Image (cartoon, rainbow, N blue to C red; front, side, top):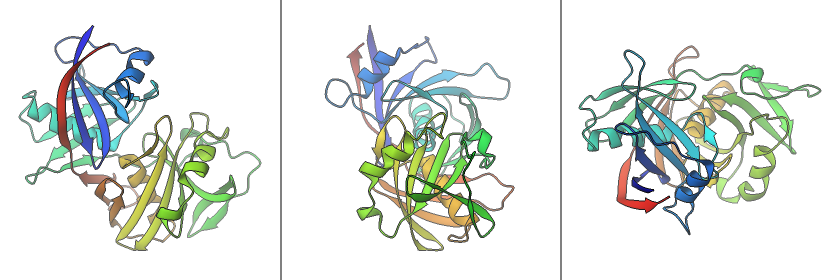
Length: 279
């Protein structure tokens, strides 16, 4: 079959977006891998399938596939691209949109300057919900928050609707993301694997970040990873409540106003090109 697509990116984290609001699009893992392949397909970190929602009060739903073909729970940069997509395609004229994913209900706001703010919901710290198997491990507490020793480093473990393990590094440019990232991401203590974050704190209001994403490898930016890194940094006393996170693809503004509040992420989203591919 021939499939129309839109190529988009949010701070360099790139996506192939498919419109399933008029006719269903049921991707097989092989088709998702083909779309994500940078040599034989379109090329993307992830594939987004946009659908109408059957839930009252919810505008849309969308599904997320890694370029490995696996369906995943959440993607902050993808959520921003989603907003730009439904606006650019005339699917809605709302500036505040409610959307459901496989395990989340998100509120997304299109700002006057074209950036998008995503209510990423509250972080999850219960290890069984991440999920993370801590049996037999002893945590070191810093500022009242647990750090877990794994693969030779200390990790803050939490979920932003998907699992994250964040470590602090002195210099992200010299961090062993290519070697240590896969070791953490595929560690057997994470039942559904994990996104491995490498956080460099510049000041209480500024940080740099690289993320090795499960199923995709290192990406130029990871929205949920930026949220997880800032939340971990706040809990550990390293960061303030409003942080500009510098990724290799661009900057993201992350805000966590209070411990019982949702995390807010604001950043860019842009269309690169459109096309058609045989699947």
